[in-house]
Image 1 (spheres, rainbow, N blue to C red):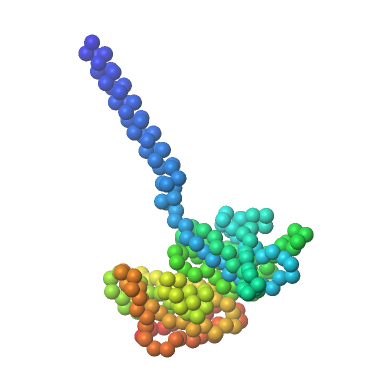
Image 2: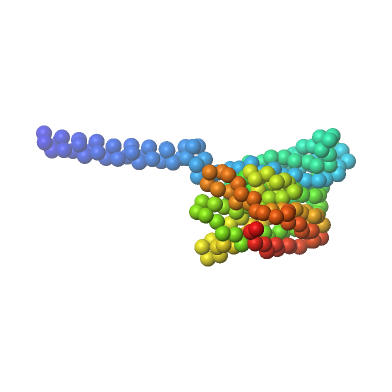
Length: 235
C-alpha cells in the first residue's frame, strides 16, 4: 500500500507541475501580455497636396500603413478650410523606423505614387508627426545642443512648425544623450525645404514642469534639399 501511495503522490506532483507550466504559457500568450511587450503611440501624418477629385492616402513599410499595398493604404482627410492640407492619425509601435509615401487615387481607381524617395519616420511617444509636401523631399535636420541637466531632466526642441510641435511642450521633439557624449544632446527630424524655422530648446523636469531657454527664438532657413545640422548651446 505504501508503494501505491508514493506512486500516486508522484503522479499528482507531475500533474501539478504540468498545470503550472500550461498556466504560464497561457498567461504569456494573452492579449494583455503581448500588448505590454509592444507600446503603440499615435502618429499624425500631414501633407500639403493639391488634388483634382482624387483621394489622398499614405502607405508604407508598417502593416498599419498597408505594407505598401495601395488597397490597404490609410486615407487622409481634409476640409474646405484646411485644404490643401490633409492629415490622418495612425497607431504605430514605439521605436519603429517606418518608411512611407503618399499616393493619390482617382475616382476610377487609378493610383499615382509620389516620385520622391521613400520618406522615413522614427516613432517616439509624444513626438510630432511630419509636415510633408506632395512630391517634395524633406530636409533631414539634426539638432545638437550642449546643455547640462539635473538628474531626471530631459532636453527637447520645439518651434513654429507642426514638425516641431508648434511651440507646444507636450509635442516637442525629444533629444537624447549618452554617458560618452553628455552634455551634448541630439535628435534628427525631417523639415520642409526652403522654409524659415524658428525654434528653442526646453528642459522637462520629472514633475512635468518646463524650463525654456533664455533669449530670442533661434532662426534657420532650411536648404532646398539634403541635410542640415544645427550646433547650439543652451542659453
